[in-house]
Image (cartoon, rainbow, N blue to C red; front, side, top):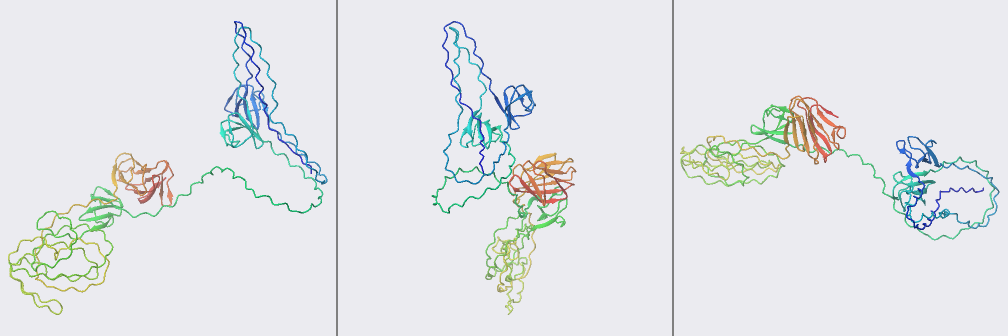
Amino acid sequence: MAKLDIVIARPQIGATGITGPTGPTGTGAFTGPTGPTGVTGMNWKGAWLFSTDYVVNDVVTSGGASYICILLNNNHIPPDPTYWTLVAAKGDTGPLVTGPTGDRGNTGAAGITGPTGPGAGATGPTGETGPTGASGGPIGPTGPTGVPGVNWRGDWIFSTTYQINDAVAHNYGSFIATAINTNTEPPNPACWDVLTAEGGTGPTGATGPTGNYGPTGPSGTGPTGPAITGATGPTGSAGVDGTTGPTGSIGPTGAKGIDWTGDWAPSIPYYVGMAVYHGGSAYYCILLNIGEQPPNSLYWELLASGPTGPTGASGSGPTGPTGTAGVAGATGPSGTGPTGPTGTAGVTGATGTIGPTGPIVTGPTGPAGTAGATGATGPSGTGPTGPTGTGPTGATGDTGPTGPSGGPPGPTGPTGESGTGPTGPTGTAGITGPSGPTGITGASVTGATGITGPIGPTGPSGDTVTGPSGTGPTGAAGSTGPIGPTGAGALTWVSVTGTSTTGTANYGYVANNASLVTISLPAAASVGDRIQVGDAGAGGGWVITQRSYQIIYFLSINTTSGTGGSIASVGNYNAVTLRCVIADTTWFVETATGNLVVT
């Protein structure tokens, strides 16, 4: 089969001819005429645009060809001959010629290498010497410089820096640089315009007949060439970053906190999660309400109700804080002083983990007090029974020591087998002695309940000690102790009487206007921050709006991302709590009361 070589010639630009010599300066006294203006060059404008105003000598590309403007125009597409003249046409596809298949001949000898083709064009002729100026006159001014022409650079090379108007060949087309660039491959429109486009593919020629097989050549194996590893090519540019993966699912809701609001008041709207103090106990709101007084179980759940505080002195001063539990001391003398006033109930602390049962220790019976006037009948002298297997009760508050008996105590009967002897006769009543200072261990005053320990093994029964019977008078009630400090995690509440406000993390807002109240999400928030919004029943309702980078999730739905998304109330007393799960941007509905509109 004959081989047809097709050579695509790229345009070649000849070198600039040398400048002719300058004529001699005349000696006359008058100015010579101005030299002729140089020929105006082409003004390259790139691809034709319908909105551009073109002037004479502007050059554009359109449909793979290039045209020069011959008449001022706008929106006249080339090749309209009234306004444009063809500069370079798009090359036609050459015909496909298939020669007849000849017989396979013998391999001919290698031909000689052909001469090297022409490179740059021939040097242009030397310009004519300009005419000598008139005698005595100066040289006339140089005419204006023409528009720069195309600077042909040959094949495009990635490592070459190209200047504006540099032209290159690449992938069977030619391109002109519109910006200084290095390693920006044509036809990137940021740096290159098309001069001439690649011609279309010609039709496929008919398949020629199959030639005869030539004789089989001798078999043989050439020597193995040396193993040569080419130089490593340049590192490619970094790939485009992959799209961001989907946002992970929202983690489980953390434990519910408590918003401590102090004393209960009938005029404040209470939302789920708020806690109040009322009637000596603390209560937790389980349903939105106003004016529903604790302990109404439909709206409130008991949070803490403390046991009777330690017995105070007979005065009416405020009850001091309960001291730390001391070690049980020895039983005091058998006399009993009057019972002090009962203190107000303190708030019960949270039940802790059950601790191990402590050892049962019964102190020795103290000596009988000296005989004196008989005081008021004190509490039963029976000693405490040893604790059962339940964990130890918190330490008993201190009780003042028993005043001395007014008369001698009756003798204690002998102890029977059961461990308890008959009670001796009561001594004659004596004058009640003054209340003594606080003793180590009181017998009948219950202190604040301590942390319950784990159930331990049942301890051995303690020895029973019988003392004189009798009960002293109950003291006057002590004053109410101060309210404890606000618990951690409380929100700061704001009543919004206007129609809009900017939200702040860890704030609560009560909409209290007959018109709609707009509350925007906080611009900045940390993970775990929250915002709570409720309605005071004024009739306007509320709406929570978003910023351009924010979104709110509510169960299986979510708001529209950005400023178009919002959550709004439907009726009076609707409320919602939002929790931040991705700093600044992403929130979810933690609790909601009533029907809400998600946009």
